[in-house]
Length: 301
Image 1: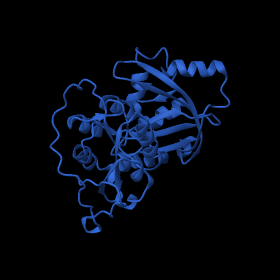
Image 2: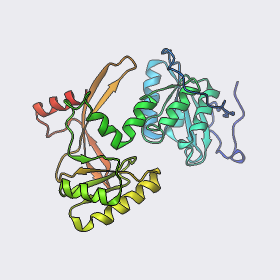
Image 3: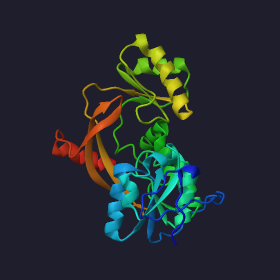
Image 4: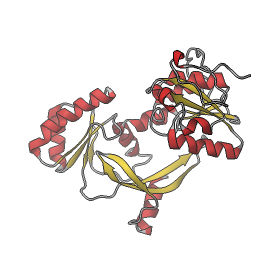
């Protein structure tokens, strides 16, 4: 049955004509985490994103015969990703893509089996992955535990330097200690040698990062990086790494499943950046030799 269309008086713009609209209801309260259920077929997928990534996911689902649900904020009522999907739900104002509860309510109301977070927004939010699991929804992405571990730069490097991985994953010199006193951070940076890169441990998107090339500006850089990390992420801890001028930023993407199978999906170069944020991503990387490329793939897997 076709539900009444939401109007501007409800806080959302009217839906484009000719498409079904569902109004979210109240979601059940979150429940304690339980072991993940056995995998089940995904017949309807909610895409918790917008723009190009949501359109790509929708097209893939259409080719596979999987029904799709779009979510949209009020300014995006006429966006392409809304019309690309079989159903669409308005979840609120401009910041709605970060509203985990509204997204889970939309998934429950539309009868979705799974939630695809795309990238950005809530895709690296462990609490959101846990909330999906608690609601009986398959989260198309890493486990909450993996998101939490890799989202903390200090913890991630500790894991990678452990006995399980240390022989296979080369790491650049760094300081990842618990002592985060300014004096300790200064001492470690001086020991490492300049230039160094200060990184907010919980950071992302280029926030809380400072390149320091001499002892003269070190104390101020530590203070400002800590302040930005605390303001943006609620965490003032810093990771210090040796900085390499002129190095290429090359990433290897990996894909794994719940059965423990892991495979790389090749590399991409992300060296063109603005304020530590990627502007252009190119694949394959044109400057890698075959031997280095093979070593990168092996380390990633």
